Image 1: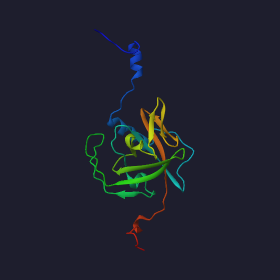
Image 2: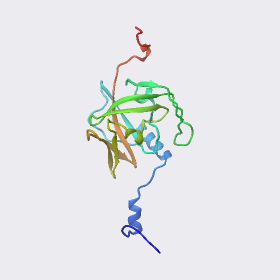
Image 3: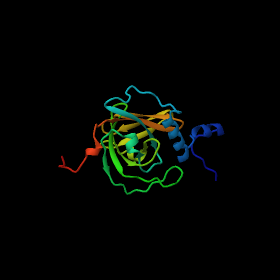
Image 4: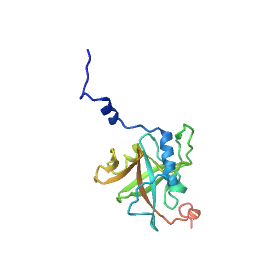
Length: 192
């Protein structure tokens, strides 16, 4: 017997329904284009100023962990640092060592709080694991990818943070507060 489900589609209709899947190497190339300025992402109202620094983060549904270079991407932001015990691989399959992990608080372009843990690794731009960004918020968040753009929606508050789609990859603009902390003078609690 020959059974089929759903409407009959032409080959052209079937091709238009499937979106191209980008491999890790393609994602890494797009991240380099964004960082170098060759690929423009949309300008938003709030830019880096004396209180916030803006950074584009790539949303990666295939990443198990989020990564960023703390001293490059969150240089002026107070972060909570701790040892890391994970092993990661980059787009090429080579090991991507993590120096440590750190928790960073940021705001989306809409002003929604984004609390996120990153592995401190040598990447061209922050990479946010979709699995990890979905845990943002008190009752977690839904991550929606649309044909043109997407959103991270906090389940409790219904607050939406926009994702921008460029060349098949989604990005979020984060605003990290500048902490004005002198790391050279951080000591043990109680030290003066």
